[in-house]
Amino acid sequence: MTLDTAVESRAALTQRLTPSPALAQMPSTPAIINGRFMTRPATGVDRFAMELLSALSAQGPVLTAWVPAQASVRADLPERLQARAVGRLQGQAWEQWDLPRLAADAPLINLCNTAPLLRQQQLVVIHDAATLANPGNFSWKFRTWYRIMLSNLMRRSKVVASVSKFSAGELMRFFPERRAGVEVICEGGEHILRVPADTNIIERFKLQGRRFVLAVGSWSPNKNFSAVLQAMASLNDPDLLLVAAGGGNQRVFAAAQVQDPRLVSTGFVTDAELRALYEHAACFVFPSYYEGFGLPPLEAMCCGCPVVVSNTTSMPEVCGEAALYCDPADPSSIATQIRRLLDSPALCAELREAGRKRAAQFGWARAAAQFEALMKAQFT
Image (cartoon, rainbow, N blue to C red; front, side, top):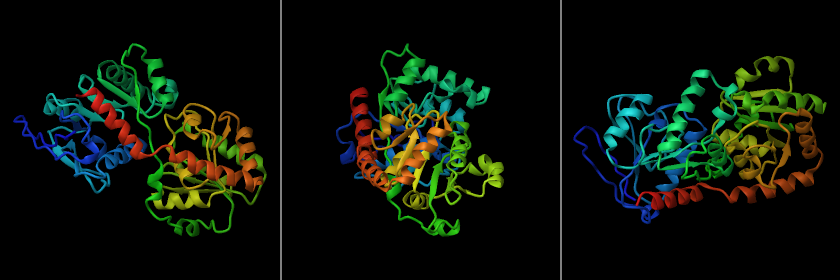
């Protein structure tokens, strides 16, 4: 499939890229990548978009995504992905008005939950139904907008995809009127292995020779860090640390940090630093209440870190038999599974091997192949 890369005005001047080998079997109808996600601070869904597009272009020419002309590209783009500024508006206004107007009849590729509401000729990836399943975790304004948006996208978009069978089922549960169903494009975790581990973070936080449990996430109550803190307290092991990595952790753990000297909050970490933490941790714990896919456990398994995850939502689908499962609502369940790993080097070794094998069943090349198959089937 060639990618239409340049409509800059009402004149709709078009420049097409040469098809790559990876895209050679895709339909000839030009398609346009919605690159609005490149103009905001990166999130988990943005990681999906970047990695998927990078995998698509790995053996071909540079791909180009359209972005609002009035916004700056904030993302660090992969080597073979570039941004082209079009239109006059910004943000959601650009996505709802400039993008579909300038795209004319070309199919749109939207990889990060949002897309033009009235568009039919498009593929949109909706990563989860969290705003509908757990509305209390979001402001009324945000969840109202998302319900309106998802309802329109599910009703009108030619192709809707999600990142797990669980999430696809959730979207159909809330929007059963969609007759075309929801497709699945998986995620991958191998990106964490592209950069060498930066062990300076181990020295900076004085973790050398210390056993620690690793947690990764944001400020959201959905990540359930309070239950991890309760689990750690019940373990009654004064030498065991809890390392919390993530951009929002300073807010989450501010009060607890004063009360529990075993808690180490790193704040934001790079991929290289995160890899070092995965590789040095006694185990990784991820007791989220709701996940559309759950990328951190897959990253941890790629790094050979034993994993404890929730027994709910997409976690069993992603982790299979390569993880220990806990009840996210029961801190004693989390503590029990952590203790099993701390007390059994044999179990840790078993999960390290099983985790690497499980992670190998996913991957961004597989995601790119699923994407290509969808585009070929739906937009010929």
